[in-house]
Length: 446
Ligand code: UQ1
Image (cartoon, rainbow, N blue to C red; front, side):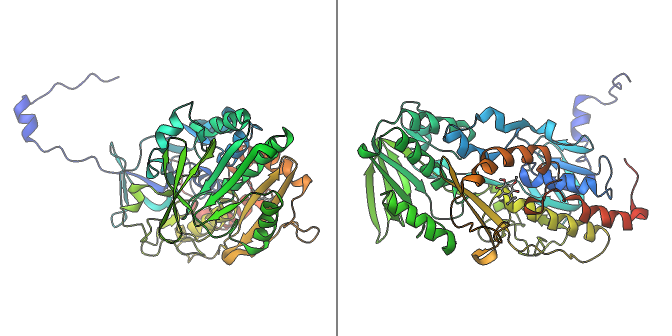
């Protein structure tokens, strides 16, 4: 190792010399976020062989990658939360350069991302940091969640998904409220999944006679797609669960939940157990950037996933403006389109692949049945098994798919870019074929 060079200037001289900012480190592709979206996209790009070792940067400050769809199962006592996470460093292929600091600002005019301690430049930028769970947007919620004696939980946070189970397990009857905010949330079905599973637990324990469950939602229906809403609304009525539509939780005060309700009313409901779905929204560093639309999401084309102003910027997953339900299932389709189009762009071609809005919401309706909702943009049903069965009815044989198969295939294949959702194991071909055609353009590993 070289010895530290002897300083040639005194302290004052050093200070008077302007230190030029380090030049940004260049990667052909920078991926912001290593969640479901970032990890599947980055690995599919690697598999294309168009980019070599060190040419893709992945920016991810979190230590752990979580299988978030599994947190409902944790809240229902079916899975252990520690089984549903992996260190990010274990998820990412060694050929990806992992930066562990967070993005501070985007400079898309200069093709630069600033991480605070350093800057990165890129040919292509993929933005998928997810969205923020805004616990502090509900007054008193953070204290209520943190206080172990207060029966308030949420499956939307790793820290509290097991508290949700502890509460449901300890419940001996009384008033249980499950909330869903107005506005965009990830997996819009989860607020009721945890309710159905809790209802079934209490049913089996003979507690329903002394239990009153309420579903208080900022929306106007159980589910946004009429075909599935019909079933869920029927179940809700059969199970004597009153819905309070248009009710948006604003505060937790002691053992009362406070809602903004229709006609500018404020409604206060006492509870013995409260499950909260907090409001969610884009992170500030995205919202305040030139990449965001008015709502703060990365402003991309609904079909090509290409940014509307900066053609070498792309987005998928929860942070994107894509008007579909934000789920891991959606990412299985979005990632294939995005990767094909990024590869096209790197070869000077127009984006060719189009996303149709595919998303899915596997809703357990009790501990033995699951309704597998699958739909495209506009809520148009697109059911993988629709030729054989009616997916609008909950089925017993679908439940193990949610509890066992999806978590398994997620870590085994999806984060590695080899799972294409309803198309099974075929995420590689689109990219590989293009790579084969363009073998001459493969750049050497750096
Ligand atoms: C899926 O591929 C997937 O990824 C692992 C999920 O996990 C969260 C899902 O919930 C769904 C529905 C899919 C889609 C796959 C099929 C076979 C319908």
